Length: 436
Image (cartoon, rainbow, N blue to C red; front, side, top):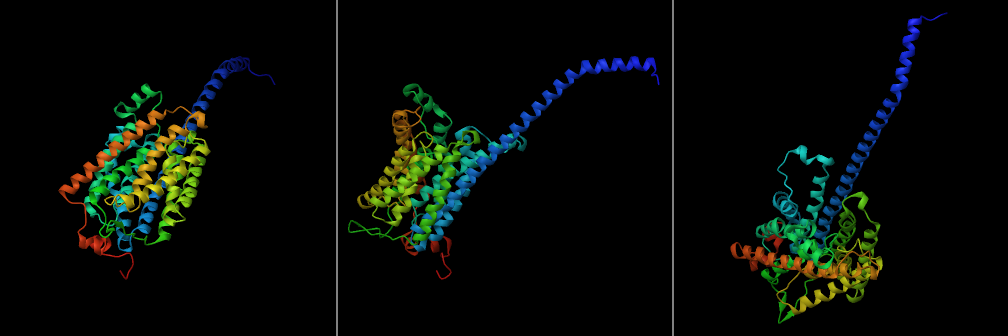
């Protein structure tokens, strides 16, 4: 069978066209495939980072249950309901304060834009806000433990709101966003910026030193000191105290490790350093605290507070030493403050635990982060010292201003009769148990 010559001629031309066109079409298709793959990988990484920091936010949110039970177990039985309610409501008002005011002060970010803009990059920026909010809300939770058993309800909520709206984000922005030129000055003067990876100073020292002002302005609980001697108020529930410590300890690995904020920045060093500092705090608090369960269960918290700042830089042995020193600091400073400073009735010991161990953590990062001591380097002791002192000054002045103004305008303290009856019945009109 013979094919039509015209058909054969056109067919040959078509083949020639296809042969010439094939390389171009192949390259174009390959290029499109690469773009699609890159886009898919980028989208997957954004989603993974969003999920990563969301899990961190949830773990730190769970730590607030730890704050609650640690306080519930430490205060007297007649103040347990108040302890639970304070932590929950403090978180509520802290969220509003940080969402509308504090986050903008720290990072210049506003939520008064369209939902389309807010959900860009798989909503990572929104979840990052959630994560950083849980840090901010830890400050009133810290203060709550120091002022327990004698504080009024709504004035304290107002103080928490103002703290999270203005005091905390002011220093947070300086340390973590480079606001007001502090970090640039430290870099120029000492060759390194102030380093606080997970908030030894930004969160814990700030919370502890704000609490110091509130505690001193409130004064000691009635009956706490008689004839110049301390009257010990035994913890109401050691199992609850221990439960609070364990919840905080577990959640702290979200607090520290997930401060990396992205999967490609995650560090096993942070995890192991947190572990070693925790263990150092436990062992030393056991030894110097004479096996006291209150000291032992606060020991890991002291170690974890101290290691936050340099957990991404230290050698694990440096972290162990940092945690051990923090455990001793907490025990000795708590006993000294209770026995030598009658006006400093710090129920949970939040000033030594968060305030002083946080200060130690900021300074320890400048010591054990050095290459000469096994650290990764890139850190300045003087920058750590000055950055830490800046945080202490801002927190102390801010705490006295906020709580002092509220004391003068509204009053901070329950009446003697209300305090004797207990905050549960006086404020919430219900006890922790049905028979109360």
